[in-house]
Image 1: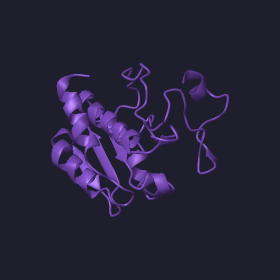
Image 2: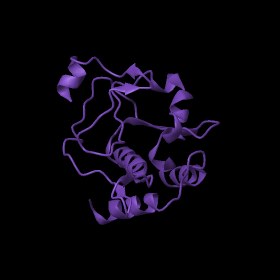
Image 3: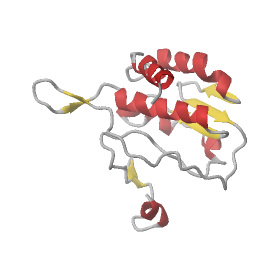
Image 4: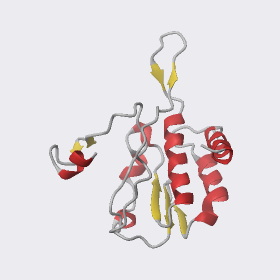
Length: 165
């Protein structure tokens, strides 16, 4: 990570956010990343939809091949993992850096996810019509992934996707 990226990460992580109180982060992204997008929209509940370039369903990227330790905080007394919003903001940071690097991409940043996927439930399905694959950056470890979302399987247990991942 170069000095500019590190400063952008620090700036992003320093913005306090709470469920349904993400306005400061939304405003920061609008003010600092609109010029990188062809479109940047915020819906009525605060979900963000960013698009850059013309997407090609046949294009593939290999930018995300290296495993890194996840950003994590621990309770001082118990030593148990605790939330600081850092993992979510680190995921936002990764997406915004991809926006800088890729010629074309779509980014969906939902609000209020930690209390029941509130933003995702209200996502505009039309935004995802020309998306060939999706990556979610939100995990407490570097070797885990969600198999279901609200009880719905995200992929076939022995299918092509899980085989490649």
